[in-house]
Image (cartoon, rainbow, N blue to C red; front, side, top):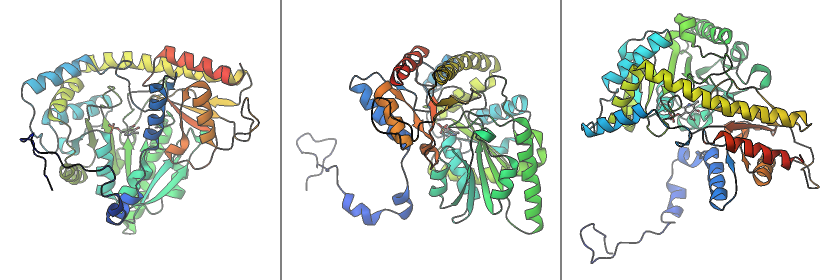
Length: 444
Ligand SMILES: Cc1ncc(COP(=O)(O)O)c(C=O)c1O
């Protein structure tokens, strides 16, 4: 066998075929890895990219990401990242994060969210994902129960990763796609972790203040009951990566500000990814009880999921500078809102024409929830009827270049016609053109 080296051009490199190890892997992979399901959204996004590459006009409303041309990061953040790299901020950061970033997060939480945590309660990681993973890992033992609403983002995958049993709470438009405290009371008897996000991915809906308060009160009562009977506590993972993105008078709230007694049981997950259009920079953080956060630090540390040092230093400067951050948010919210409102109006226009569609008015995040209520209804221009969300998705993509993600990608099983529309990767003009095509597809 010849072994390729970087030094010799005279020796041929060993060729490794694409299917190398495939047969062995069938016996070699762990049961967990065998059972993992890849991201459904990325699969759809791949199909859309292929269509666009083939010359089709497609409005890509699928990915929960930002196209840098439409939504660039703050220039200040880019400049400070460059400067940090030039200064040589290129080695390992401390395992719990750069002190200046932890202090900046501490100040934002104190001055903007009204909750003052000690510094030891704050852990930096490479985006919200490792924070979620560390939360699941630090709280839930294999076989224990995690509870989350459906639709929701990726909880099914994280539950699988840690070997947890999942209790799914189906939610719909009657409760703004959020679980109410009374739904939780029934579902949470043995759960160790309740995973919630608000604003919600995929629906863009926002939990109102009275529900957030009821959630905090529920946590306190449930944990008092458990303490009395010697059972393990219930924790809440409160994912607030979209907290800066609310519209039409909706406001983000936290259970800890409203019911401070629930603080021992709440773990916040947060990041610059969505609020500063910085999904590729990979900076996120956990805020929670210090005794739990210190264990999460070790989870994140062993996985090596630190945020890059230069980005941490730059993020600290940005979070400290309320003036720059606020100015950025004002502009960003305006642009996201324009796109969401145009999409909502587009759906309303179709509805007025008698097409069986509806949408939840924009509330938060970069998402609009749309229902194409077409199951069992005729496919325009054909003899058949729509039987599944997948058929509706293919029809919208094929006939109108209108690319959406069905709620199946967020754990929903039934084909009820609900879809997520995401506006971060498209211009207003592209949305308007797409609705024009949609009108035609429905015979307009
Ligand atoms: C609710 C929610 N939490 C976390 C994430 C992941 O964020 P990050 O890119 O910082 O890992 C997403 C991404 O779409 C999300 O929607």
